[in-house]
Image 1 (cartoon, rainbow, N blue to C red):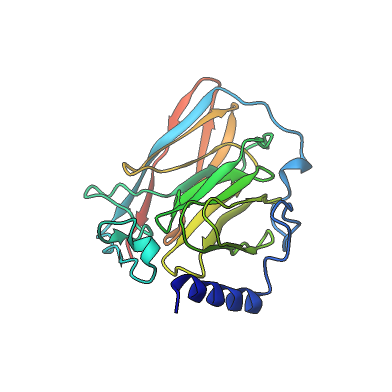
Image 2: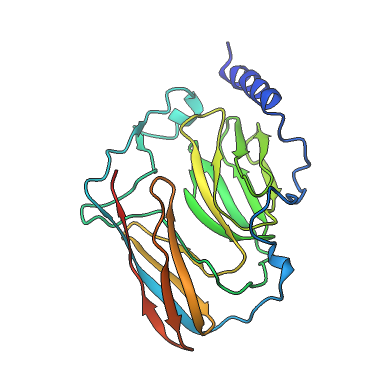
Length: 258
């Protein structure tokens, strides 16, 4: 059987069972099951001049990353010279931990940007693997591959969705109306594909890089609670931070390997 026909049949069956994806692509997600209020429910705060920066580290031995062989889809396999590593836990020899969403939990609401955050499917992988955006900020999801994907958003506070993207270059636009950390995305066609979004009501967030570093800028002076969240290790112990105008504070987070 032709591989594209096979994936198309499999996806149709999945969508039928899930009962999802009936909304138009440009529909805003409506209220979910409770939780944080929308970003529009309070006046937007002015940006400030303070910042918080630091590192996220992992203690203990990091798990061996699973290998992704891409054999299930020839189009995926043709874009890779060999295997790739699953991105669930990325830590270097020093324990610097990447892909950790760090945000100011009680930060003042800021106006949602009109510029979309772009989530790309390329080489049958999501990029970025972890990202942040504000409630009511546009999210654009792009299929850059010449094979079928579907974007299965497994939100619990916001409404989830399951949208097919059968053609290369297809774009789907969405919005989340409420804060939710973290929101999982997966592809029901390619089981190895998954990523996470941190949806918050302000612009005070960051994602740790491969060196474990992060930085949150333009904070107004005040007292804040800063939290780090990892897809596998959960939420860190919150840390209280006081900043004055123009002040730079350092905060570090540690997770223990399972």
